[in-house]
Length: 129
View 1 (cartoon, rainbow, N blue to C red):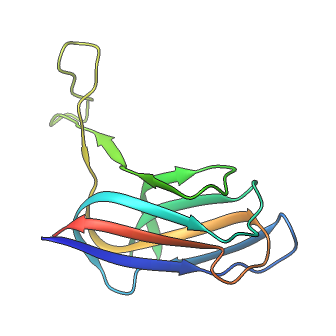
View 2 (view 1 turned 60 degrees about the vertical axis):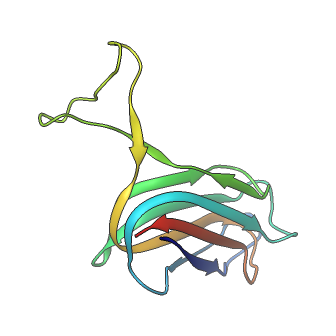
């Protein structure tokens, strides 16, 4: 079953330096299939968005980063497959194999280098769980 959670991030601070962060309302348990970023119309093109899995009070693994953007976009974040020793797996000795991120916790959306805005970015997270 495909599920969706929405994270709305308000930012505070001075123009071009405002920041903010918010977590998913509920833990996400499953594979992240896609993320849809919807920026406020007045967000500057310097806005950085980082989406991470949140374990306890720390950010654990980066799922996606969108740098210096204000363009609404849908992304399909993937990570390289690793073998038991932690080495990246390839299918022909050169090209990596990718799979969706598997998460079991809150997903955090952090915004930096923005302007002070309500709903500076709204992120829809689609996952199979």
